[in-house]
Image (tube, rainbow, N blue to C red; front, side, top):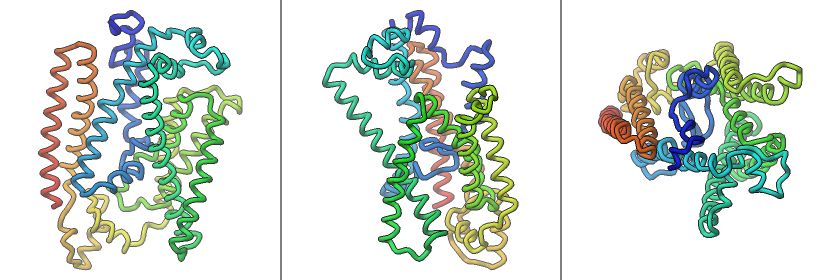
Length: 385
């Protein structure tokens, strides 16, 4: 009955209305053609990152880390969105407009009543026991996220800045102290920034904009030896400044506001151009470090031939060096994994929508891709074992 309600039925399509160019570009073209590889943010990290690495390193073995990461992607992308979606669709019936939301929160100033309050309004309908469970789950999710961010941010400050440039000889006691101070400063800065935001969507837009253009850098560092630490620093600084400009300065200068997807594309272009220039004008990482990294991580592709030839000329005997990264199988595994996860995402939706034929087809596609991914993983681990 939920999906047959007119106000809901017109919003359950999994693809946007192709007659609305603005919607097609922002909701379909940009995510599929640009966002997935160009935007880095915690939890969605093209090329890898500290957010997911913290969890992988806590696993018992490499195989356990891979299994946990695959489960995270399945749960995060294929399963978790649907409870949100169903609650959002139900809220269209229970709270169809802003006056109904205002009635749910009579003591809240009308100026802050926005559509993003529909979820808290739906929570008011829960009985006390279930509401307590939801509040506890939200608190747990918040603590998990904030602890990860603070740990990641303070590690950047300590290991990549303080220990490297300020005091390389610092002992562990001082590094721990600096890490604690950095954590406090990060919390204060984050709280100050939150006071400048008007809604949750603005926060999400800024998060995407700050990571715009850094994703490609983090991917290519595994394929091109010329990318160094200065490239990453430049990308993070440039993307942050671009985000601040578009959110707080652009319209203040009298320029017309740009849509979020236009800001994203411009941010990607500016940041990418910036870090590429930095990679060409700065000195490369010293060859000894590159050789050690190449032996340990075994990056593949033609971008590492310079380092590979250097090791061959030195006739370095290292068993790890013979265990090359099977790049084609790795890329194929990535694509097959995406098919498996997105197939499961849309299959879940079809089952919930009662579209049995589409649900069966998508489930079969997802299951087939998962089996193929398992076989590819066996080939990769056999190559790297």
